[in-house]
Length: 193
Image 1 (cartoon, rainbow, N blue to C red):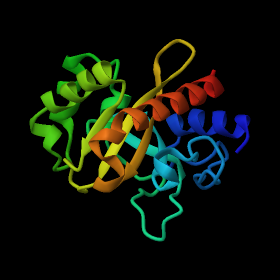
Image 2 (cartoon, rainbow, N blue to C red):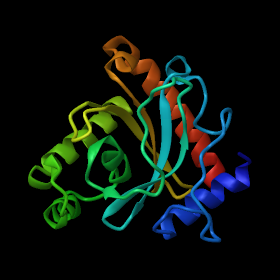
Image 3 (cartoon, helix red, strand yellow):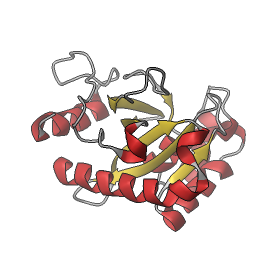
Image 4 (cartoon, rainbow, N blue to C red):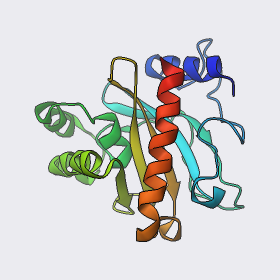
């Protein structure tokens, strides 16, 4: 994926409900070797780029795992912005009062709805460790690690996430995965500027 295609995907993902390109076309799947599809985690993890659209988070790009069976999410599907590690990354610079309001307005049966402190704890983990890791504590029972992608004004433009299973995210591997994910997010940020 070239740099301009990546920039357009992030910009249009913020605007389009379906996460497609500016012409309303289908969302894009990042080809192997594109931004976000490196060999993090031995090359077995899926990666996705998600944006915030109001009260929702929407995956707009993904890089698939080479495994025959892997954890992923469809592009353009809406999830509550408060949910999971992606939500924490997207809400990284959001005031606690706004997070509480988003939780109160949420219509999905997610645990964060009744416990917005979960979101703020994940954001605190992001600040402390540089990444937010969710060890299957979600309605999908999958492991995910997310970091925010900041734009030129240091505002959250997107969330970059690795998806996998428990074996992909062993405790001793977390710092290395987090460092690789932060490095990829910085590269994404450079492309968005």
